[in-house]
Length: 311
Image 1 (cartoon, rainbow, N blue to C red):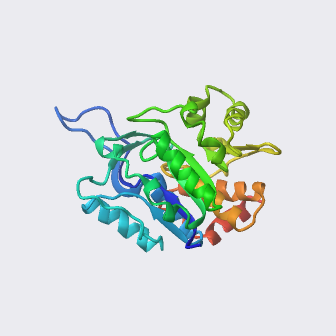
Image 2: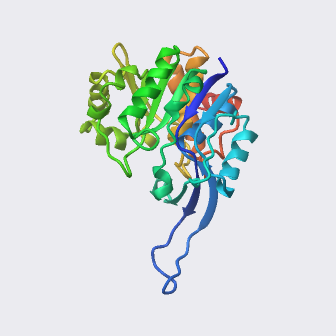
């Protein structure tokens, strides 16, 4: 196969505003501690992390023919991500997200119409069949906010014998439920919502009950990302809860994406579930120590060194 991992989904530029002061200094002026531009989107973050972790990585996403798109392409290529499957329609600009980052690393984001574009990744079945594992970033958001698109993409991966992972997002422009994806969910090997997303889609308040709801819908395994409290994993035979590493969080943007990339990479290397989860926790923790989703994580060796510190 061409890739170990193919990441499919959202690609964008993040405008990160840290330390925003809501008190105006003039009629139309506000202050902030810092402002930073960073490439982002789940597919981009996961692809860059996976490439840094040393696996053959490709990306299937859409970028406009604009400066923001060039910025994303450059960042992907510098990390060693294969960009041969990137779609670049002239009529659709690269999405730009504004993020307000709080002192504790949590954030709020503002999206716009460019985030609605569905570039129909299911129309590239040969690409979806080209990897040992495929990660669908942004499940429940474009391009994966149409049941038919999700179903066709999942079937293409499944028919090729690849492993299928789905990272999730809260809806923005179109709202789907788990019931809307009932035909697709049994094709997913693992779904990886954070706690807020899992609560929203399942209606449950505890990680175990959240995971049970996804399992009842046919998903083979579930990881609920719990931020500073670690993660919870469950399949039909095993359940695990692991704490997060005690790092000083600066910006949580992309930490969950780095977590997913780390978990999938280690599973492809043959690690058992617990070992892969510990590695994933370390990837997410590293990401949160710097501003930007792809700033702090450098290599697999770096992650292993961090794990050694907390043995």
